[in-house]
Image (tube, rainbow, N blue to C red; front, side, top):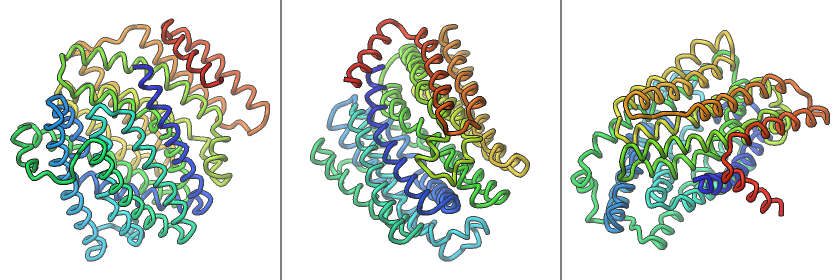
Length: 486
């Protein structure tokens, strides 16, 4: 398991590099105001994607994993039927959204309506983005976790090239049109690759959605359950950005987006281990106790890996911001660590979410995740006028912590989820080390003294973290480090 996390994480490091290059180019070419504008448009298009797809791209991993357990033929039929459904639903949804943009722009409101011209190419990209996500999930369900991670890397590469070329040619408008064309070219390439490599057809007349429903009677209920919360997070994210836009302006919205984007690098490295490895494992046939044990062990591995990634990000925040954005974004270092803390908690919460889905405790999952994600938008809207970006950061932290605590409580009280005292201590140690790093170094200047003290802090923390490793795990880490150094 540790090797798989490291492998997927290593591939995603490359994806992060390309995402960072894209962010750097956009920061230099567009500035904080442009980044603020793109963050609002991106969340609006993501919201349309989630509503129109009714949760099917996300829910598909459950049924594709089940079909893969039944054989190659069942997997191909399920893939083709779900592929057609995702394409039809998102095409209809993006089309209806474009009708609103052109015919009823007043429905967008004054804040969002100001970006009508950017919404057109962003909404046209919705079906392509949904299909990309679906195909990545299909590979994960087919136990091709490494290849699905490589797909994510290729997506990041294509989107980076399209964004840079488009922005240089025509600014923010060029960014969205170039990204749209790149997305559709990439979808075509991915479809042909899957057909060539795994004989997965574009269209299978024997695999329409009605047959999939007959084969999987729970597909409608499960998809609707996922849909009931799939749009809440992008809605809350958009509300948070609109709250900052309305309270402190477009430039501050761009600064907040820079903090979120850089903090999300932690997710980009670790999410594939959860989504491409743990989630399919939780949705395959198996005993509940085995799934609980696997999820607990997976969470322990995350607690060993995450601090080693998150703390350097916080210690050298100013350096990262200057490198990946520009000096115009240096103010971000004041509150950046808070968004990293939120991502740290979100990663841990994701394990509990995957476990609840895997053991079919779906109603509780919807209530816990839905209310917690909704709290993000409510808190951000309420606190931002008084606290600015700190109010949004508080909303992210509360939302992630609520999911973590409530999922853990449900799993403990109902399914025998039991975290050892050592694992509790490991979690507290990592979280306290992360927060302390932020408090001590968020205002540090970019000089040799800061680099020396920050490096010393990280080394001392790492020595303490090593005490939580098992002997075999420590040998594996040291061996991998030695190979990398060699």
